[in-house]
Image (cartoon, rainbow, N blue to C red; front, side, top):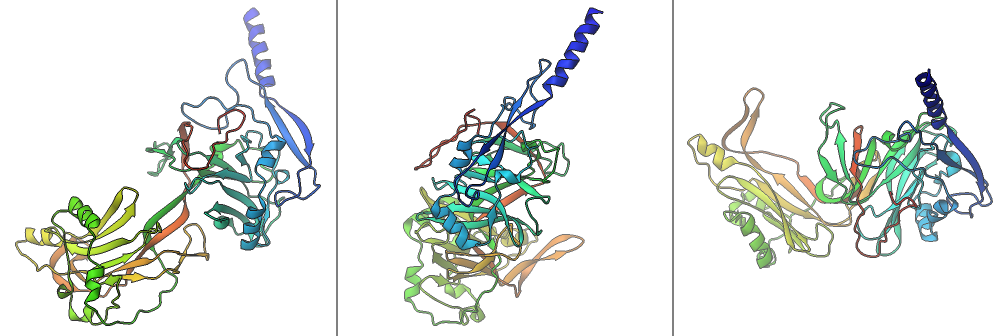
Amino acid sequence: MRMLFFTNVLYALSIIAASVIYSRAGIVPKGSALGASGQNLSISSFTLVVSSLGSPISWAEEEGWPEPPVYELQPEHIEALRLTKEQEEALRNYMPDFTPWTIADYPTVIKHYPYSRSQLPYIVRGDFDGNGRFDLIIAGRNKGGNKILAIMSRNSGYYVHPLYSWNMHGTSKEPYLYALFLLRKGITFALDGEGGEEDEPGAEEVMRQDGIQLAQMGANSASFTGRSEARTLFRYKEEITGIYPIAVSSTAASIFKPDYLGTLVLPPAMEKAVSDYDKNFKIWNLRDYPVYITEAYPYSVRSLPYAVKGDFNGDGVDDMVIAGHNNVGNSVITLLSNTTGYFVREGGDRCYLETSKLGKQIPYMPSEVLRIHEKGLEVPYYNQNKLTMTLDTEVYSIQTIASCSTEDGNSGTIYGDWHKIVDTPDFFGHVKDFYTTDYHFLRLIKPSVPQRAGNYKEQTNEKGIF
């Protein structure tokens, strides 16, 4: 009987422990883009009762993390995330009819959201591009639907970068708001299910820069439990990558001048980087190219068929791309300047090696033509349909003109003699954009206090977790 009584008491306590106590407080924020002047925003502060039978209700599946603390939305959280005049101006110039969400637009059921001075459901602050300055990501709407925009810092002022859009006309009362979560630099995480199976563990990764998680939620959803529902991860990346220009003007042939040869000789530092990478690499020269290429080429002090020079990664220092060969095959080597010297990238074929296995030796000859293209090419954003960005760095292209292989549907790649092909050029440029990892279970493994450079100062909330 005593045991039954004790069990009933524990059962009653567990019911009480699952209850959430609400207290309401009215806060009048200053007028800005984040809240109309004089508008009373009702802000909920939540207390989660801890059960004597176990841990508090969890809002995420995480390894090695403490159970989530109780967060309360405070006036200073909203004040800390107000847009400055410069940020408001950048936003207004980019999208005049954009209206950010406010806390009043969100349902009170998101009681497990970790409010802080760095994040609210509709706005987060972090150093997303790694330049040592704060950026903001903000959710809202315009006449075209719901939007998420990044207000990015630069040397002088801010610019706006489109991040995500949901093409649905609506108001704050309709479905599909977004809850944003800051994912800090230094956090170890894994994306489970990337191989197709939801329970397949993903490889551990470390956040190199701040990023954000995005959870889509209904305006009246009663099931939203927090970060565990944030299935989309956005990370900023700058890289030399394949691009797809909206339009490229045709380049007329120009007269070759012997002086061009001297301007496109590898400087000693680059020459050493190539030798260290591949001591057998040999660069082509003009005599190696067929006449139909040399007669129609747009020569300049920065462009020859086998070598182009430009500031391709936007750091103010010249980079070079060169075409040549070794004993295995033809290759194109990209030499990008960095703080320690030059980073080497390579792509190529295995023509000489594979044909030698067949008992033949095909002649050494170029299979690619390089060209440089000026700044200003328009290319699509990674995450946006029908929106384009303008590249502020020079671009290079690689056009394949010959091949030693063909693809056979039954036996794969067949190697043989060189044959001429007519191929469209592949373009490569320096892209600054956010990319998406979607529809996977993100597992946070361990928190880490990030080390930042420059004038970026870490700001955590009262609990010291985010």
